[in-house]
Length: 548
Image 1 (cartoon, helix red, strand yellow):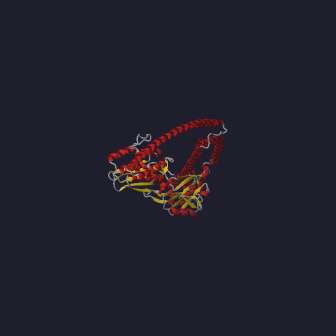
Image 2 (cartoon, rainbow, N blue to C red):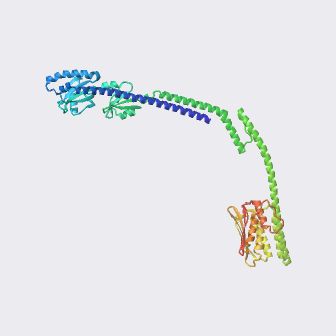
Image 3 (cartoon, one colour):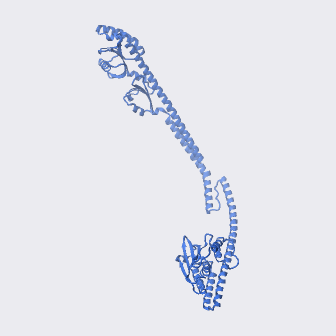
């Protein structure tokens, strides 16, 4: 479909490009014709002006004309006029279309050889140009416009030129209008305005208005004059077939659009809709709402649907087998993890029970039966709590058991320990693995504070920071020497999830706890230890927030 649209766009662009190129070519041809017409008109009018200039110059240079203009006697003046008339007849009319040939002497006395120009018009002509040299212009005389060419007449016989008068030749502009022809609109321009045109509507119009009115205007100056000739072509004449061409373009465009619609409908019903149905079905299969594709009703596409459904069937069988295999592996891993946790718990319980029994033995040997009874009662409560439920216990329940254990240890050591609890109330809604804090407290009492006779203090804190449960167990005992502290930290850091508990019950408390936390909570949690000799030790336990 996209290729069809692109192909149509290319055809339309080429069509309009052809239209534009043709239009420009025809317009250029018309422009050239206009320029050629203007040049031809200029040449014709210039030739006429040259003829008038030649005739006027020949007449002005004739000795008979000079003698005629200088004659003062009236009878002799008119006799000589006959001779000059013959000269004008023989010279002017074979090569010139002048309507009037007039001579005027310096006193304003004129003689009209041809034409019907009034005396008043001739007198005005004399007064306006009596002191001018050669003049070529357009004048209005007797309400008519004329091309006027005036040539001064001089007497050179004395060595110094003496002006005797002038020869004036006038040709009516109507003759020039006929020279402009009837093909295209032509005009003679003077002073930025049309003074003569074969289209009377243009006469008197500024040339700027003419240029805005026509499609093409070509202007050529007339040599040695202040006149110009213009040829103009209307916009609708530049390309008279443009409307037909535009109609053909629109028709072709409509046909192309109709073809696109027909092809689109065909493709939509036979290709796009079936393919869209298949794509939608595949998406629904991916979303889990379908397991097989429905048939489209088109043979080629239904063959594709059948292949896809076969592939889906094979995938379903493979996924079922894979799921069963993964379940077996998962069950085996859970069993392995539970076994490891059980071994660690058994080892931890055994470690705790052995230590407690040793303490009972010492109390019994000292005859402290009442204290032995309280310790035995506490041991029973702890063991009952340990094996009563799940591996995860409520944090406050864990602290309740921890208090009983600390009471037992205080009995053993004669009440030398002071205990400070600082646990946030928010931990009441959380659970944690059991027997995590008791071994840490036991280490603090038996190793950190055992040698301290006075002011022995154990601080136990519990709080939540950044969605992590933090327990801090601090003592003010003798601390741990740097080398031993380093060894303890390395043993905690090297705890491997795949390792099983080390045999025996000595020196396994912290490593055991670290393994249990890693197994049940992940490697991001665990134990860190800080200690300064002669100042005390702090163990920090981090656990995830697990709501009860």
